[in-house]
Length: 187
Ligand code: SF4
Ligand code: SF4
Image (cartoon, rainbow, N blue to C red; front, side):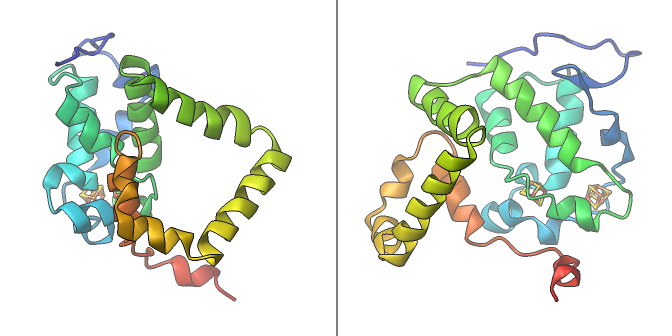
């Protein structure tokens, strides 16, 4: 079912989503240089799963020209927020701020199932606010990888049972290419 944006902006007003400015969408010159560095575009091959396509969607949402449908929400939610596109953009599009505003709007309009909300609370409400719990979770994840359980889970297809877009996002992560500047930070 389609959902209209709750605060349709006026044509003359500043472009905002969830009260956050997305004026940066107008800096995109559609050159496409960022596409080769986007893991979701590499994996899915569709314009709307590329930085350029998502910028177009964010602009359209902010202008009230499209509604937050299942399809629009999925294209935006699949963004990993890795910001590899922002690093290579010659026009200086502040992509990170744009996608964060869009995701905040999605959270407000479409909070999702109880399982998804519980998963988010576990990560953002509990773990991130408690360093000790976060360290314990990280130790558990290292054990999960070291024991080979991760490989077993991947092969079994259980990843597909993760709520929402997490399963698809997880597959995209495996193809994530580092931006060209990544090497600068290595010693
Ligand atoms: S590199 Fe920057 S200006 Fe070019 S399409 Fe991507 S976001 Fe737009
Ligand atoms: S933040 Fe990462 S996943 Fe999202 S559009 Fe940019 S390069 Fe693609």
